[in-house]
Image (tube, rainbow, N blue to C red; front, side, top):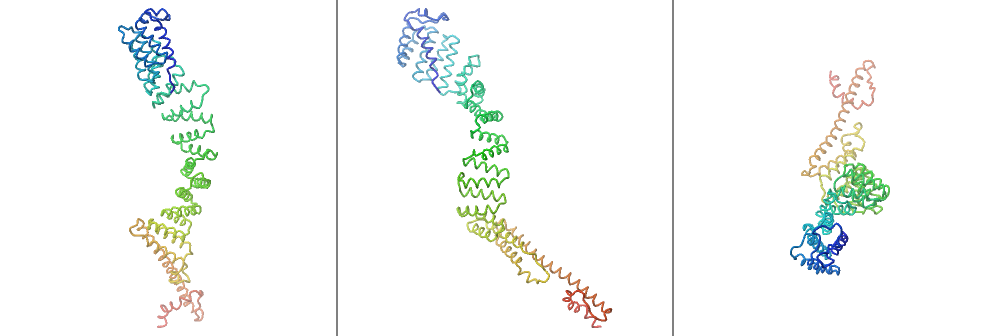
Length: 494
């Protein structure tokens, strides 16, 4: 802050010249018309003050202070003499950068009682300025504010000083009304006027007011990205995330976002609003462009986004790069899962085995291997009972793949969290195979029963065919010998 004392110094020097400019007792004869009784120097005090003034004019302020102390020691000084001497002493202390003593001297000048009301006001303003300059922001601001609130002249420089002092003291609530006056009076309004109100509204958590000022700033400076960032942040902090996303999306599409942090924020927004595919596209585009640094973490994030979007084919090569680059077990497991989702059980198993060898949970890995094998088995044609034996069905591709699935589930450690699930899967697959055999047995029994009825009907019809056995359904011929062995033996025995 600039030194505030030039006006005060001139006033003090003029006073000293008037009231200490002669060595006589009656120097008041040259005083202004407003001089009152007692506002004059005696000869002895006037002589010493005159000497002090000579030192002041020669910039010998230490010597001047000594002389002024000597003047203060003179007995029976009147109030006006004391007030004037203290003012001169304060001026010299100020010139030697001794602000604390300058303030004390000016307060003594007021307390001495020799000043007119307007002089007291002027001196209080200068004390306030000195306090602010000396780092006592709150004390100085309060003194200046008291002066203005009591009817003092509200000069623009005072308002400006009050704003800065309250801001410097971090008392934003006190600063705000003066900042608003400063803003309203500014013509033309500059960026600094808007910035200050934006700063204060933000710190005072006044989102409505801040929104108004930022909106006006954007209208004035539409190309200032920091304003758009502030607008988006303010919307997000106010719980208006969708609007914040729209602002960020607009900035990205307009090419205003270039930093990695800003670009990643856009990716996160798309992901948050359940648009993982769009988020992945942006991330991949910026990784390829070099605006987002490539790392295993970023590649993992990209693959995760593609997997969330069920774009496993896109995720697989990315995961392969990430896994090969980092060697992390989890990445190999993620790769295995992506391959599993694509139905590539062979490569999925290779990835899971790599994950297991690097310490990944064997239970979870073998569960997914088993599941993949089982789902692959389900793609095979359904078992055909007719014309096949049980042994042939057991050797079928479908059943062999089921057995391989059981083999994988059987490798899930009992201590694993997946142990119970693995047992259930094994029971389920075996029950499914047994159900096939029961179905085949049932189908065979139904066919046999139907054929036995046809064979019986053929025997019954022999009475009408001249004793000739005529079986209408040739497929039933396979059951005739069995039928005869059970049912016709007795007839022949008779």
